[in-house]
Length: 325
Image (cartoon, rainbow, N blue to C red; front, top):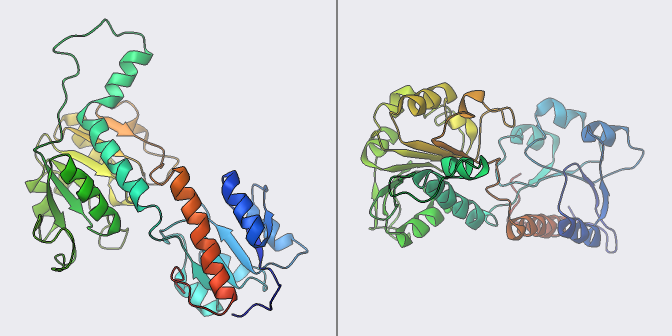
């Protein structure tokens, strides 16, 4: 696409954004921020023409939804790295460009992974509950004895950008790194020779103290954490999920946690969120966060800027590195 000089893209924003990102979008484009609880309905009923629809993970962009978009829409911009919520083939059939936000939130998510590991290892849920319930009677050498991460083995399922950044941080804490990917790391990778490859998730979980899910949700990985996989884990395993909620079979994980077959879990993502399985709520050995892995000022600004840059490049007929379709 090539925009006429001086013309500004008309962008319909169907996601709530922080104020600095809103300001930068307004400076770059002709923007309408929807406050309607059904933003796509508002878009279809609008008497204005828009070039771009900007949305996020909570908006399912399936084939039917894509076909129902106003004819003027020429591009979809998702305020996320993941695109599980978009039917990319349907977008391609309709001739829509699709943009996402790769690379800019990996550090935030990696830091959150370490936070979750520490939260479980140091029994954060129980500690916070003890303080907030006003039941703490004072220091004791037997109170809430946890684990330190140094000297322990971290297994990463999915050694992509985020997994690699977690590995670098974990090494600084004194952890030994194991991983499982579709293929071993290439010789030019920074972690080549220092991280041990495991061919399968089953082999990986049996060898480690902390098992981190950092892989995409695919037909192969959906439900991978089931009773069978968990049965191979050590009884002091810490499981951490920063990837997608549907990688975990909730009933199997809850059962393993309740029975003490693993030590604990740190979860930032859930199947069916925000309606997560209520079985998690009363488990003291679960440290849960409300999907805040990328929720830092730096990441949110970076996500907005990469979409602005990509849309600007597209409008000028240039190549946009963050364009998927």
